[in-house]
Image (cartoon, rainbow, N blue to C red):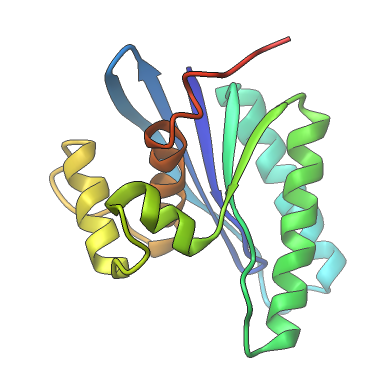
Length: 164
């Protein structure tokens, strides 16, 4: 099974492709989709859609884990991230990704650590250890997307996947 983890944003969208083969978990690729802050919002959203469509076509995931928005003090940033997240969800649906699991940051930490109090650094270290990587994944958005894909697996969502 192939899982796509996505950390939504407007400037940076983290993504990670993980394969689950029996009990073996392998990182295939991770990175970020970037948009230029000088572009108009709809141009940035168009870039996110185009690049995510390419990722979906190349890697053909079976399922996706996407971070849910949580309260933000900067409403303007929250709205633009929500717009990016909307494009991401629509893109997944248009590419027939029917199994989408959403995690709040706290729920992600509960699944990975048993509590919602882990630091960003602790998550990065756990992700590297779980995937036997020589170092931490950079940038943070790609590491967060990888943690989301791992939470999909550790949360038991991979075991009850039904594909049409």
